[in-house]
Image 1 (cartoon, rainbow, N blue to C red):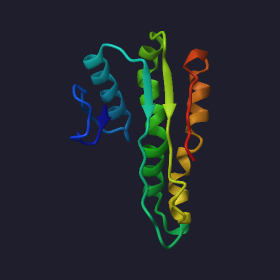
Image 2: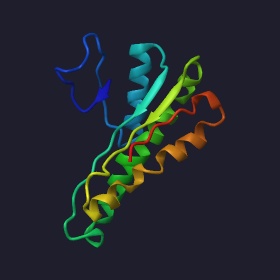
Image 3: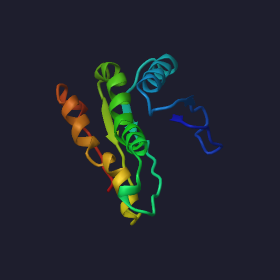
Length: 141
């Protein structure tokens, strides 16, 4: 499991790999550590995401916030998938699952900064089509 911090609720024997998926360097470090600990992979589950509320509306969102939203909500999945795809192709049961949520929040500015999550399955799916058995996706609106 990869996360910001470990939890007492993690399954016994789970391996914890701390990382930052918002940068390319962080995604590559997570991928390398994962392969070192596990020796290979059968599934990638992209579930990172974050958003901040801007009550003044989308026009009040600074450019740096838009970039942060793209890095965390969209590019994190692209970067982790790209870093692990060569190893995943070696699996006989390789799968990629992209999860996104946030539909329960009704603030327009929240929707604006989480919008990058919605198309990521489509983009990553196209990237993975060179090996069609890797095309297994879930998106939760």
